[in-house]
Length: 289
Image 1 (cartoon, one colour):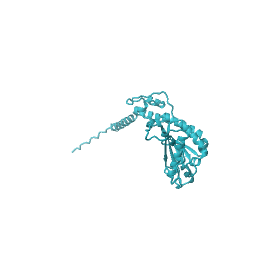
Image 2 (cartoon, one colour):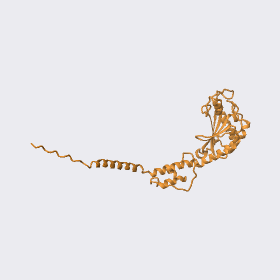
Image 3 (cartoon, helix red, strand yellow):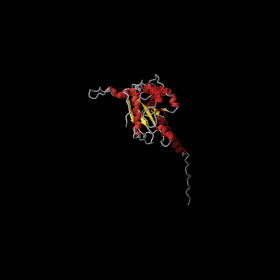
Image 4 (tube, helix red, strand yellow):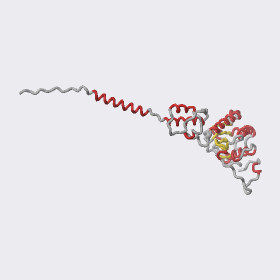
């Protein structure tokens, strides 16, 4: 019986095409992903650039120029326009892209910066002696009058030799229409004297004393002024050291960022029943608590 011959298996020489097809598919997917991630929303880029530019211009970092920006934010901003926003002008159209901070105008900020420089020059001797400190607070510019330069311990009467510095402050502030908030602060050492039963009365008494001077001697409109006594509960330094307690004993004159005319309504005319005599603004002896 003859044996059947086995035929040789056919060798497939085209298996490399499977691997090649897989590689091509992977490369195609890779380039599709790269292409999709490279597509930039120029409209959003333009809005972001405008918002950053407006913020820096509000801080006075960049100077305004005549460059205009598109006012219709529904249309994409071309890349060259987005780059041109580096020198964008702060116009009213920018308000539609990013509104200016509420209650703060660039002209007011520039004026406060100018006022701070004028105060630093006028009060240079007191600042060098650490009797006065200037800082920017959340509500505006703060002039911190420290007890060491303006008040005797436990007293609400301003020192005679510090009247000159206070007069320089008042002469610069009376020309502007900013509202002022006078804040009295103390350290955490309790006080109990015939005049002041606690630090609350002492801090409030010092604030009202400065209010009286501003109205009576320097002609400030009373509606521009407000006063608050905070005792030891708003410290700016630690009360565990003598140096920290000395910094906490102060009266802060807060120059509020918004002018009085921009927020406060016009005062009503007093009637005959509630009118006060003109003598209520005359200098009087300090009240006894």
